[in-house]
Structures are given as structure tokens and as C-alpha cells.
Image 1 (cartoon, one colour):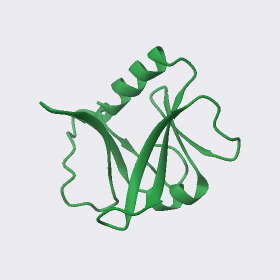
Image 2 (image 1 turned 30 degrees about the vertical axis):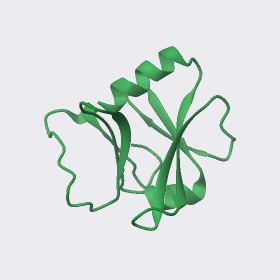
Image 3 (image 1 turned 45 degrees about the horizontal axis):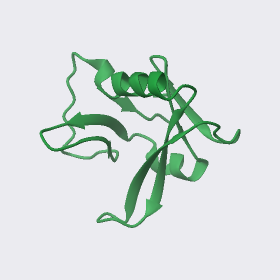
Length: 109
């Protein structure tokens, strides 16, 4: 579902990319921050998959390797979510590879 949502955002906010940043804080010691950005710095890492992009800085990227990025909706909210590598609650639909992004060590998803 994340790929579909990123495609929608790209149509609504042309030339914008989703930025994912890791900040200190939160229950696990880290919090994930999402923003839309028009002109990411040239030294950022760009994650490409199925025609969509997600950008992150090099420090955040080191913490995100192997993480799963998804987009979920329920009755009261819709949000992007990050599941850290090895997070036991991540259950992905094996028949729908477009439903999530997995950040790999080579900068792709």
C-alpha cells in the first residue's frame, strides 16, 4: 500500500519526495519522522522501488537498513509506519510485494 500512497502524493505534490529521518527519542530510543521535500540535498540516499522514491540522510540510512516501510489505514487514522529490522510483529502479504518497501544495504528497496 505504501507504493500506491507515494504515487498519489507524487501526483498531488509534483516533484516532491517522501523524506524519512530517524531522530533520538521515542519508546525505543528512536522516532521516525516523515516529510515531503521538493529538493533533497545531493548527498542524501535515494531509495527507488516501482517508480517511487524515498530519501533519507546517511546517518538515518545506517539505522534503517533492513527496515520495512508501510502505509496503513484504519478507522481513525492513516499513516506511514516503520518496522525496525527483525521486528517480530511485521507480517507482510507474500502475494503482494507492492504493499511495502524494505530498505536494503545497497540503497534500494
